[in-house]
Amino acid sequence: MFNLVLVNPQIPNNTGAIGRLCVNAGATLHIIRPIAFDIDEKAVRRAGLDYWHKLDLHVWDSLDSFFENNTIKENAFFATTKTDKPYFDACFKKGDYIFFGSETAGIPTEILEKYKNQNITIPMTKEGRSLNLAISTGIVLYEAIRQNYAIFER
Image 1 (cartoon, rainbow, N blue to C red):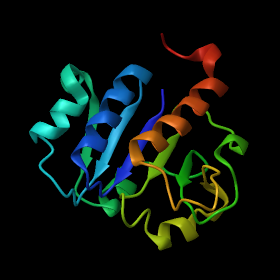
Image 2: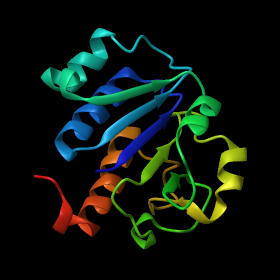
Image 3: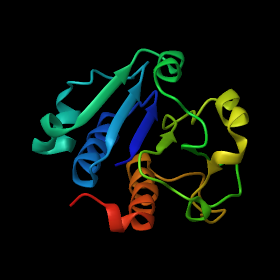
Image 4: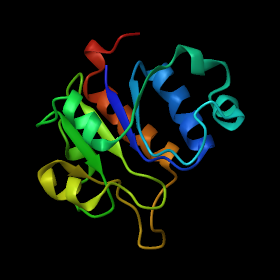
């Protein structure tokens, strides 16, 4: 129903948990290389438990390769701490792409600038810098599902 895009993930446990989330939510997971770990690493499988083989997974060699093979226009949102637009103000539609950057670097600035009107954030207090990647994907993905629950494939 939705597409989660992880740009250069670095922590296998996060990616495994996100894979499990995608299986349960009926979402496709796109992972953009470079990846800081082996995608078959035991930690990824452990975090995804017995779900990893059920995952609709696409691994791309680069952002360029991803963008060459997927039409990205108004059908995408880019999660970042560098905007004030809350994710719950976005209007998600079936098939949308929701991008998340690496745990340390986020989404590249040039991508955020190109799609500035589609940047979204999860509101938080000034006490913290960011949320865990797996938690962030769950928050935003389930808002997209909430908005489209009538057509959610259960």
